[in-house]
Image (cartoon, rainbow, N blue to C red; front, side, top):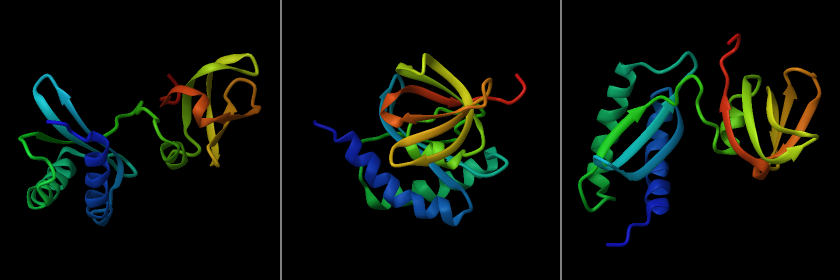
Length: 158
C-alpha cells in the first residue's frame, strides 16, 4: 500500500491547527511516520511558558476524536502529543519567526562569512532569510533558510 505521508501530515495539520489554537496552544509541527513500534502521528504543540502533561492529555482527547471521525489513516497508528523541548529543533522558517529574540545554534551547509556554525539571537525572518545576531561579535548575519543544515534553540547561560 502506497502511503502519501506528506499529504496526510498536511491534512492532519489543517484539521488540528484550529483545535490546538482554540485551546490556547501553538501547533509547532505534525509528523506522520513509521517507527519501531508502528506508525506514529506526532502532534508537537507549545505555548508561552511551556506545555504540561495535562495539556497534552487535553489535546490528545480532542485530536483523537477528530482523527477518528475524519478516518484519514486506513490502518492503526499511535497518537502522540508532545512538546518540542527546550533545545527544540528549528526546521521551518515559521519556527524561527516564532522564536524571535531567542538564542539559536545553526549549522550551515557551507560557510557564510567564514563560519559554518553560528550561535546568536534570531532577529528577523523574511523572504526565506533568517537574520541572526552573532552572540560573540554582535554583527547580524543574513542567512538563507536553504543554507541551514540544522538549527535548534539554545539554552541561555549554559
